[in-house]
Length: 197
Image (cartoon, rainbow, N blue to C red; front, side, top):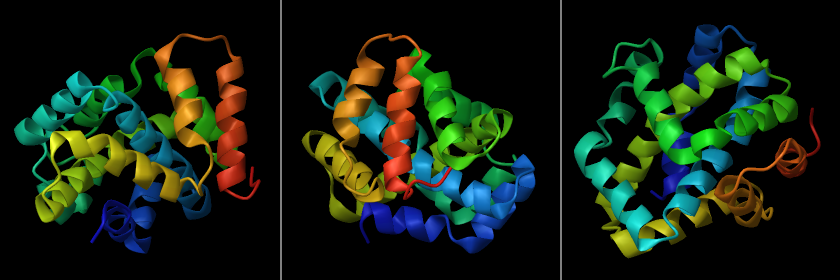
């Protein structure tokens, strides 16, 4: 199974229901926010893996901290019972987005209608799941360091509906911008979600 297949399988209806209860949101908004957040997470990781140094760093993190076992107990992760839970997720988000984390959260919030206060916890739950899915894909497909960027970029494009995600993410994450980055994110997410707000 490929990366997007593993993620779709991991984030099935029951999981979405549990996440929505945990963050205190309705299932519809939670599902839409997940659809918006996944390509952002994958795109951010792909952007970071575009250099040899970045790809090696991600591979090291997978070796050290992410063996894919999180996918076997997603309920435990959501309930905060697994390996640091939200704190672990927040750490991953910091590595992926750096100082642009709030911009990404704003984009997901505006595209999905999910309250900003709930997007942060949602992203912290999704981050370890994404890392676990990457690790499992790597194990199944024997993905090497030089293949990571392509794998992640392809999955981001697939889940992002083929929008120009990578270019937008590269511009947004590589250098600090003013608030206009949020509009770019919202425009991109609005396209992939069929204009839903």
